[in-house]
Length: 248
Image 1 (cartoon, helix red, strand yellow):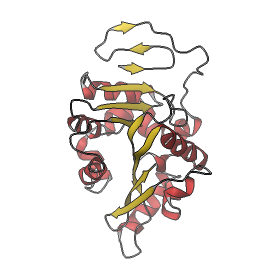
Image 2 (cartoon, helix red, strand yellow):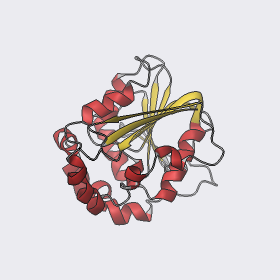
Image 3 (cartoon, one colour):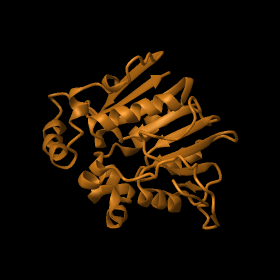
Image 4 (cartoon, helix red, strand yellow):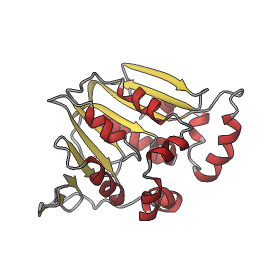
């Protein structure tokens, strides 16, 4: 079901009037997202255009499945715990994640854009253990230490630094002690990688916040006082992409 700031809507179409907590502020699309990424995530025609497996794979230079599966390998198969996916993902990411679930596993997906939640609702086809929630990544609304795994797949590069820091803080807040926060995103490629010189102008033009991840480590945005028990980092495709796993 899709949980919004005002109601809970079953993904099979049945309506239920369920009031949100009175003190909960309405979830609004952040200005940076409307101004910078309307063409990719907000406009309905954008969703129609980008929701093609071959296209998202092309955008990642043929690395979509490799990076998706690298994230999944950080969790036992089958997955028996609670997984939080922060932000919807074009392509088969969530559907493939649902296939990894064991009998006791579940997935929650949180996104700030209703059009993305509607799109994912159609893709997951009322999967009984996948629930969708209308939340900002900086205010997830879930209890502390309530998830075994938190996934952020190509989200951080789309956010300004202040938003990125808030997102990471929330991810760490909701993961259990000993649980993992799994980031897959862009990374500064090696100088000998020709895609460094292809991607630099593309990202500077279309993804103005992405270059932050070329210059700094994801751990630079950890909240003050955060002391993860372990941090593991791997890079892919000549350093253009990274997987960072923070174990709380």
